[in-house]
Amino acid sequence: MENELGEDGAKCETQSKKIDCTEETSKDTGKVLYCCDVCKKSFSRKRTLTAHKRTHTGEKPYHCDICGKSFSQNHDLNKHKRIHTGEKQYHCDICGKSFSRNDHLNIHKHTHTGEKPYHCDICGKSFSRNDHLATHKNIHTGEKPYHCNICGKSFSEGSTLIKHKRIHTGEKPYRCDICGKSFSDGSTLTKHIRIHTGEKPHDCEICGKSFSQIGNLTKHKLIHTGEKPYQCGICNKCFSRNNDLIKHKGIHDRKPT
Image (cartoon, rainbow, N blue to C red; front, top):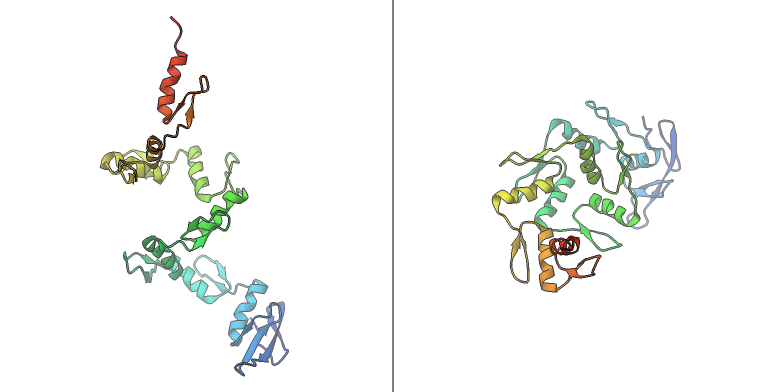
């Protein structure tokens, strides 16, 4: 147990670990401040300093009686327990979706507002969540902290590793409710469903033509730009579409008569 803070200059103990703390009076307000002698941060209440000290000692006195996980702050334990109880007290006033934590609700609201407050200081790309920004930065650093325990291949994003592992397991958890076909990732299922619905969400801003897949729109735009990125390695002739290049190569493959 933690001892109460002593008078001026007294030592405050956290179990067997000791951290010095002092009392001093604020010159501006005249109120007593309780100061951490490790980082010099000041607090107006003893118990706030006591809680703060755990960031230095690493003590986690609050334990979940369901799973045993420990926390340094009681309010963090209370948040955690909602995972077990299923309680979701924070509700989105836009779509009604509920969350167990307020910070998760705030992150969710970005999907409605389009707000992306987290910016990459290298390329300027923005994200709605800080953890997505942290993962993105691995692209710039070249760091690949996620390793496949089957083949050893490494990835910069955890989600990419999860998708990769399905190559080994053969798992296809995304199933089309219309035709029953299954896929290994959600984005492929989304594209597939457009075959049934006829949805074409990607529009060319030049001519207005619509496409079901962004890749097809990108290829289409080459018609407007005149760009021909596909080059024949034999005669160097260039094409705006890869399938046109493939057809052209048949000319070279034909045997002379």
